[in-house]
Length: 551
Image (cartoon, rainbow, N blue to C red; front, side):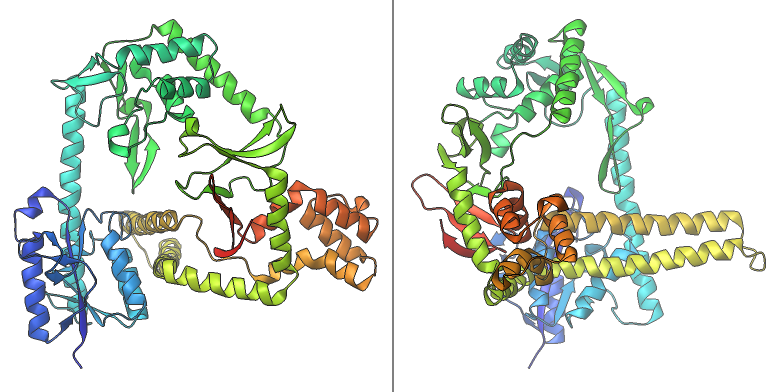
């Protein structure tokens, strides 16, 4: 039976699209290579026509249109799909044009990628170069990847220098114009439609309106927020209003270079790197600084204000229609706690749920799982299987990258020891060169791991069942009709967050537990509870990512 091959094609710049690195050219060469080897092409469900465009029929291939400068996974969704299919054993070999389609000169990241494929028993072959395990093959791969990295870095540096040169000449040459402005011949000019609205935001805030009130007023007036055409949002948020009020462009100074990208991470730049470009002002300096002072005072007040109420399902109730979170709120008129989902905050409908009712029902369902080892084990095993299906290849990629990182760290330690050893006699320039190279590799891996973890988000493996057993202390004691031991009381106090002296009896502990919203929140967090609710629909409870019951 012939081996199954998956084709991977990638292009990252307009220049590449006009050369032999175009998708169409890569497709022809990879397909011819697979035919010479006698491979059958794996049908991945995505197809490319002879011109290299996406099509409903054609040659099956994974295609990325983006950069891999900071490692696989940042702008390579097709490569992540390929890894997911590889983890399931869907094919035997990956065919790409050459090593530059998979690396920008970083041996550590490329090594982690090959290690992961080997773990799936999948080979990596290139249509235009050797792919053996000889030392010369590895050197050729490294040289081609390094040349690609230098080419990409040179191009990026020229772009940055060009933008800085435009800024020095008082020309704006990057990104969309701020809200209230427009770009005319590389200069910021007041927008005829939104400039008065931007000025009114400052005026309203100085008169005492809150950020949320300004956002609600703008949404009610039908004013579209910034980037609405791109993101499709029609509702203002208080965060957007806050960013406008903090932007110095409205007092007549546009700042270029206030942030810089280092290994894919955005950081504030040193003040001497800033370039200030004059532009039309909307707010006088005195008003702008008055706004900054009020923002600072408001932020300090919010940070120092203690929380008066606990919402057990805070951040765990989502709209079944639009996916936005419900917000906990105290209804002063009725004197009750609620979870609300409102149109004025960007929700798709107006809906609210009484906290006491939905929290109690959710807690009863959770207790059924906690007190039943069979149910808890079944939920956990299903959650693990579902997680592996969705994110197993991401976890494997993180593990492979961390394994290479650990090797580089050991090499770094050996390098330092060699430099300090007088018998070896390593020169300082040589030590600095090799040290900086290792630091670059380690930083690149850290950036890749951070990117992969952000893709996965909060979708981590569920907690081990042993961590849930500590919640059974109360029920165990009640069932046996024996008082808690001193060690059990201390453990229970640690879990429940209450003083040991309050646990004088099992009954008192159980009563305090059942009436404490903090303890319910502990349970909900331990079991990864999620509630989906919407107007006119029954709320659904999910435990460890699995559908549990209707509330």
